[in-house]
Image 1 (cartoon, rainbow, N blue to C red):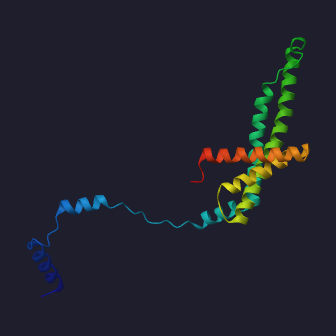
Image 2: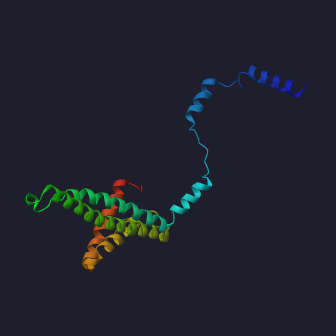
Image 3: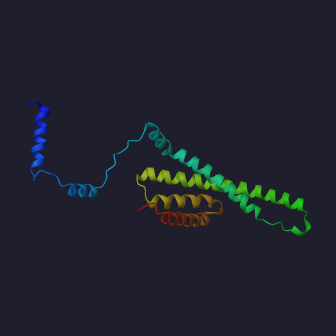
Length: 183
């Protein structure tokens, strides 16, 4: 008797025995109850390199500064366009257009610098605190907000720096709670 014949005989004997015959309804309901487990996909070398680059505080800070500058540029253009000249009745249309363009340029550049510094300082402070503490929580956001607010308002003196610190830290924590990043 060959091994293939033996396996066929064993299968036919098992099928004829009612105790060993599987019930199709029971097996399908058990399969439906089991959650599908997906295999873990290992990251590729390129993904690991990208994460390593993005986890660098200097890279993250510079990118945040550039993006903040871009946001400030567009916000300045929008808000500069809303400025009305004081002597609007006495100016010709051409003079009003030139005035509006200059206002948009000034406001854009000013907002660009402010938002670039804000993004750079906040991102650098948050990343540095996160690396030092080795935790990713709301405290990092509060400290980064305090550092950013204090830096932006430092020209006004110590009282202004303290108010800026408290205000920006509160604002940062409220935004984080609204976005619900930390569960």
